[in-house]
Length: 446
Figure 1 (cartoon, rainbow, N blue to C red):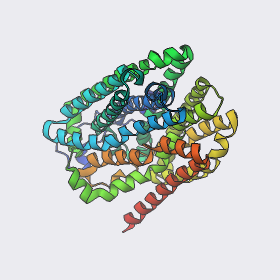
Figure 2 (figure 1 turned 90 degrees about the vertical axis):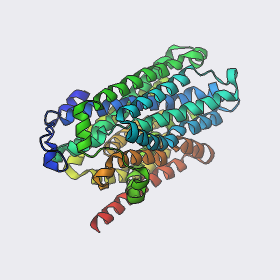
Figure 3 (figure 1 turned 60 degrees about the vertical axis):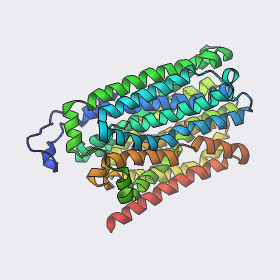
Figure 4 (figure 1 turned 135 degrees about the horizontal axis):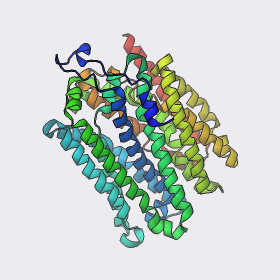
């Protein structure tokens, strides 16, 4: 199913904002359909996830040899995963700084600065010499560029996902909620395909010397073009007025945290199961295969590409399921499924090629069903004036606590204590999601 056909389903014209309160009389954006907003969301998220997975895959296949040649392979991957987490640590700071910039200079200035920082950081990684040329300075610069990517991604928040959620038809909110999530499997599929081609086509020496850099050249081009397209979109008078009418404008972060801090935490923990599983079937398995399996890296990347297709189908199905039984009930039910899946993870990962492939394919299906509704499932808790910044910070915190250190923790625990600890890690995420959803329901009753 193509992205355009997915978006077209249920793409009815937006209702007049005046029918929902808070809009100025006479403003009519009825010709802007939710599907049109969804295009911007999908483009933005797919480009971000492509960059995300290019770095993640390189952390396994490239960086241990290029930047940590003085360490054993395991330690090199662990150090690479540590630097991988820097972008997630930086994202909340990027969001806070960018909101201050937007309040003073406008949305266009904020997105332009994010575009510049993202382009500079990604290009910097592409041209960065390795440890053999620069020594420890190469590691420092890699860390700086990775942190810069996180700052830029925090600053790239354009409010389109919130705008889409507010303007989706009442009976199609689950469907439109999943559209932005399609960016994850799309970005992962393209990144895996690119690395599979480069890895299989080049001698190992050439791949580690210059071949891997092409993936970052592509990431630079895609991210800059996509962010520029989103900048052009939100800068139009129609979208600017619509964002303003929906109160999707930056507010004081200090005021938000003091009055709505509990909503940020509930929203972040409500998505924890999905975000924990996210890395445990994408980046972590590749590291495990390269270290402890005789399966071909190229063949495993192909399996992950197939899994990404399964994940995309699961995300689409999640939209249909959520519109039938509710988004939060879907998210809670899938958290229970993830908890059950965690019990089989060690057996499958240690079950040879067949077991590993089942782990990937089944894991992607479960991830798609869960992740499709993970973003913004409880952001309706925010008061309207706080929704713009609240949604951004909730996503940042969810990524930080759920995914930033997942590959590092999973590989470190499994390598030193056994794969059973991967189950414990994943199970803890599922329990946190169920607890957050239960707390949210209890608070709603009060």
